[in-house]
Image 1 (tube, rainbow, N blue to C red):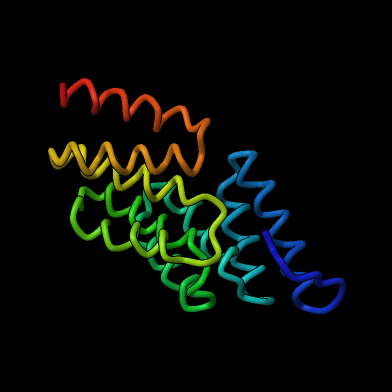
Image 2: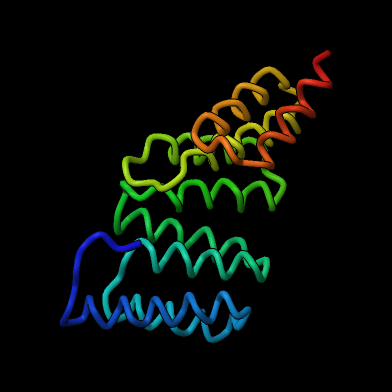
Length: 165
């Protein structure tokens, strides 16, 4: 997750806290994860820690706080794609199928992002819900180009293709 190699100093402490927070998150201990992510951010703010803290908030349906953390992540590192996609996802969860689009497009423009399949898939979901089936099919297809084994995108593309026929 972190590209630099920090072996001492606040960066190293922040990474250790981040790793502990992620382990707590994986164990569904969200309160511990929140505290550890916050501590990591206090020691040395990273886009990853803000984004993952937002992710934990989203598990608790605290979408506004999740969005705030993603915005903080973007301020720390505007090149990191995850918070853009996450904001779009949180807006969908809040029922906003319009403002989410710009965030998914931002994720696609971000130079530092592990999987462009997710914003394409999310754009496909939104376009499908809005009845724009050709756009949905295109984005599901682009998600599969980026990640050929993306099962949800395969199913979604087939579903949309069936509706188009």
